[in-house]
Length: 209
Image (cartoon, rainbow, N blue to C red):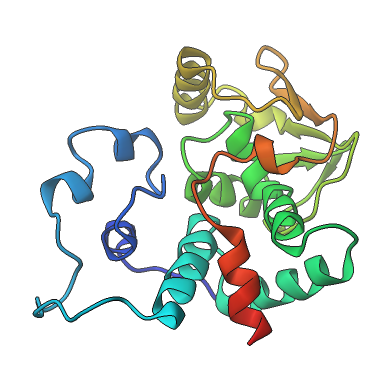
């Protein structure tokens, strides 16, 4: 399966905003954006006003890279969102939020989406009592997520849970029992539940051209 294996801090610098690709590290002074204000690569003289296409493209890239989705998979998700009732942009974000790796991250069982994806792919995550190792698996309402017994005492898991409790970052559309190392999707996430700072309408306009 194709995946990005390059330095993730360069992604945040390119988009000009912390995308939480390294979890809480992005909120500390170690964040690459705080240390290096410029975008990666050779520095160029600033041209004039950014074109509409560039603005639309950068917004799409910011959303896509935040969830760690490659271009083809992102486009397929957009096409699915377009067929659903309601606003396409909000449907797109809701579908991305319901990815299994993102749900594991949102529940606080991983410090970043990248770490959550690794947990899923290594077979440490159970969905309704069955092992699922596909990070793009789409969760639904009343889906129960739990961690395999052989991983419940992992030090990285304990650190992630401790951090999640301290920041109280669990969204309202999820229920979590940290003692049992399990959680539940109580409802489909709405736009107000999604904390990513983005303008999804620009993505809709980009693909509509």
